[in-house]
Image 1 (cartoon, rainbow over the protein chains, first blue to last red):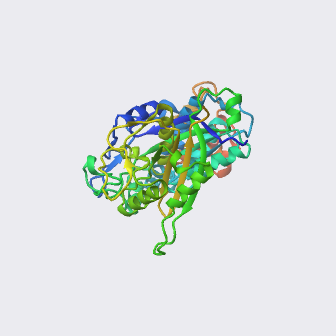
Image 2 (tube, helix red, strand yellow; image 1 turned 30 degrees about the vertical axis):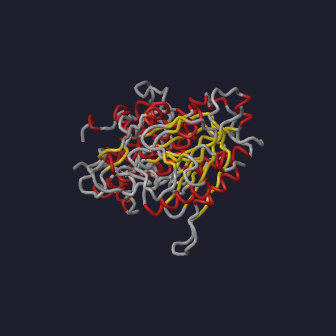
Image 3 (cartoon, rainbow over the protein chains, first blue to last red; image 1 turned 90 degrees about the vertical axis):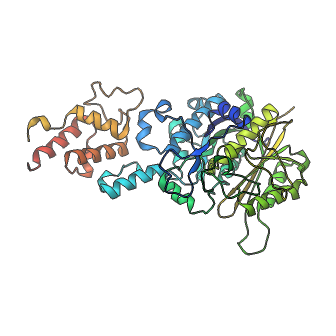
Length: 406
Length: 90
């Protein structure tokens, strides 16, 4: 129980790749999925670009019983969980009861499902609202549906801290495994590219406007002016290291070695943002020195003051231009809770393949003293990676993943 | 109302599929009329949604207890048909 929990399965549903290897190949090629929204007519909105998952047909992957009761984000999450368990070589039916749980993060719940039911309510009346609206919109629904589908009745929950939640869910899975749960399906998938969801996102004031696909989402660029949202994410099998060894797990991608979460101080307090404390805390928890970190996957907000806070925190911890920094989410848009688990998957594949995926589109502004990996992937031995995520309202989270053994 | 407009097993099959899909390994087109809904893979929420769709389509109101009392397609069909024949014709 002393060893760090390990990741033995990865299930990825990303705008630029459905499935782990498809995503990874696209990411190393720098292939972006950001484009004009097709899921609804965005003409009348100031922001019209998104990272959509194009070719996904839920009925090809899921039983018909689940379709009328699930939002798109849940359908994507269920498929991601299936793939993660398959990748891990886990047959959930063979696990003892309560040995495995599900911990996801959620940003907005099942928005599109709720939008359709609200439409039915207003246009036709209450008798036309689906009985499944009772849970299909709910933040915890992905955890619940994955749990039911696979009979995973161990510790299960949902974490809500916007984009930081994707890491916080993995940290909660790590805690539960350390307390004795054999494995947890953990991570997040979000998808709310529908007109109602869009209006809610616009309210943040952080969405990039306009139609220029190449220049819309530019973290750490002097032209940074907001982000492009996307849909998708990743679910991981987080497993007790001894359990993985005993069953002869085929793949051990790496270990969840350290985590910390902080809150920003009250606006106007004059105190420093919390991201640096999160980084320090995660490194301390992992027992890792800054010099041992081979790559940082940035939160990459593309809001100038947030980019500055992140770049300064990295520079203070590691020194100027001392560690490669990357943001492959420039190819997918920000996936809210789904973003960080996808970054963790990318970090683990960086460890596997010895290559750092690129940030695309951005030209690093001179004022940021970070070694941003731009344009093309950079071959490099990677044993330790730091993944950062921040959520609207002051959430900061940092997770250290490390190669196992050798 | 003529007898042909009454609620049949085929009507129920169609509405069940729309409302809640079909459980893997269950053949809804088979001889299911006396099979418990739970054995067909439908829990209370699936039946609530099914009942709502029947109400909308046929312009009737089912008691809440109707859906909990009807444990098989036959009993639900009987309840719906009793409502339909009791309904005043337009």
